[in-house]
Image (cartoon, rainbow, N blue to C red; front, side, top):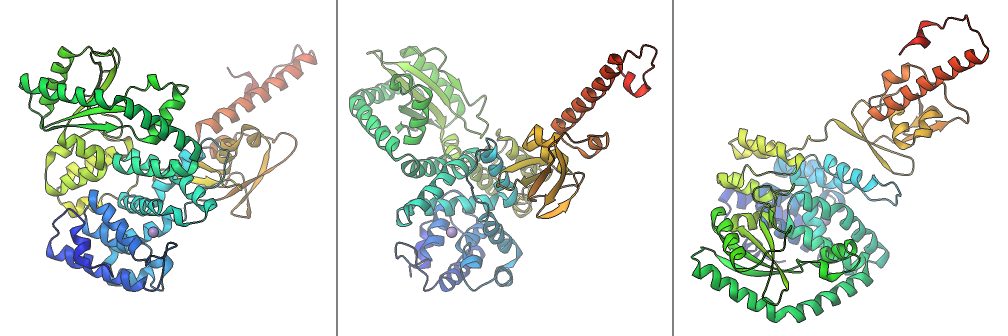
Length: 504
Ligand code: MN
């Protein structure tokens, strides 16, 4: 067995004695529980949770979360139950492990529904209950993707497709750039093997042809910043990741000259003021490309990303992208939301108060309100989606509905026509009424009739969504109008319409 001290050394964090103790117990428990089990490549199974924990430890070295990562496959794959884990490790760690186990049941199915993937992402987030569960699941997936070559090709394709559609976008939404990049490139190779090879070739050629000019540009930047007295920590080159290059090329009809950021130079500074100062002197010496100056410091991206971007012409009139950011912004771009908690725990306020994706905004207000880190971690439990339910069609498509929605809302969400022709429903295989309120993860099959359903005002009361309301109202108006027309046809001139038909 790989030894515990090596495991600790692989995580760049100093744990307290109590934390270390918990980690050691989890490490040994998991090792024993998985003993004798092998991964597809012949490795002892325990190496998987160990690697996942090391991966997570790089960005979020929280001892309870890492203990849960070490134990994440124990309830499903070994003789030990979640109850046993709760007795051994307490409710917090057990709650995290249980979340990971449940999340493992959210699987992607073949679906043509265009909202399916977005809804699956939401379901994924809602099911996980606690954002730490998502972090564990992402670390688990990273290690599975790194070792994917050992599983059968058809399974590879399924896992990689799911990673590309669900896991990588979630990592992106959480602002964890390093994980998003790795998940995308590992899946890209499997999902689009031909495009992977051509994109790689294109990139290699581009890098080769621009090697010298990049070196020269870097030298010039050092010189300019120094002579102008701008403080900075370092300049590094950053090469565009393959999948992101592929996506950009698709957008620009494969015209490589339209992609300006294949190679970017990155200037890292200590302070925000130095970022703007550096941008100023760069524009003094190089002509900027109009429309390409982006101030993500003043207006961060929705996932919290901050940086200044500009594209300038060198003396051969070739374009170069330059990115300028502080070391803190750089770290946050790699670690995303995990960095914020880490700062919160260490009591550094600089990491806090940045703009986050909408559903992370709430985390921040909690972060400001709760000074105690334990209380804060407890408050991380996600209830952003507590007002939403996710309902399945018999084919496995998911509809995202407000809590309290009825069969009527569901039918109209699937198809307008289905709404107009429904007479009943099977809810989880049992007969139900169209007025029944639905619950999270119900599977609903609408029973249709050939002719139009008789829609009454009661439908309005049972419907919660705007779209169902609009359609029901539309029907009621049309229906009334057709009665009025028939009365007109009959030339009943002196006929007085009942009040109900005279509205408007
Ligand atoms: Mn696993």
